[in-house]
Figure 1 (cartoon, rainbow, N blue to C red):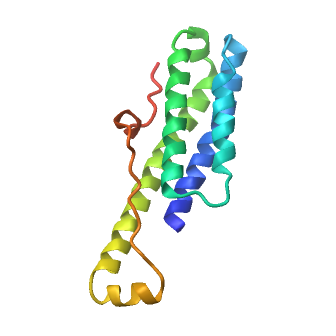
Figure 2 (cartoon, rainbow, N blue to C red):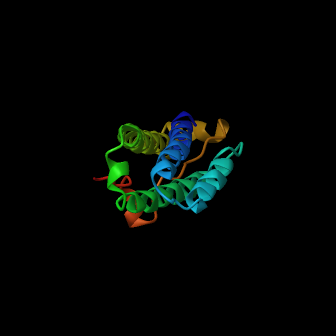
Length: 153
């Protein structure tokens, strides 16, 4: 549960960053608000009290895709790419994406450990008593979403 919560926290950090990036972009471009609306809707979903691993993975993939589209649009604006504010936000986004990757890995390591203990002796004797069961790994279905959004200038 702790490792799952760390993924959730990092995704919330990503969602907190995106509106700042969009606001910076809007200052330099005629940026469409549809991306901001999508991000806001996903952020609202992320605030739900109990998300399953599948729901969280879906939100993660959708936000990564929104970021990719956002960064593709940025390529058309050289002044924006040179902006100190945008560069700082880009670096923070990159660090956040790395943290999300580490959180996913930590979750999967925790799941592997739990599943191994739940399926081997003597742990299997106690998992039923403790009402603990195997958990699914955190997997990304979309091969393109396996990588952090590329923000290259």
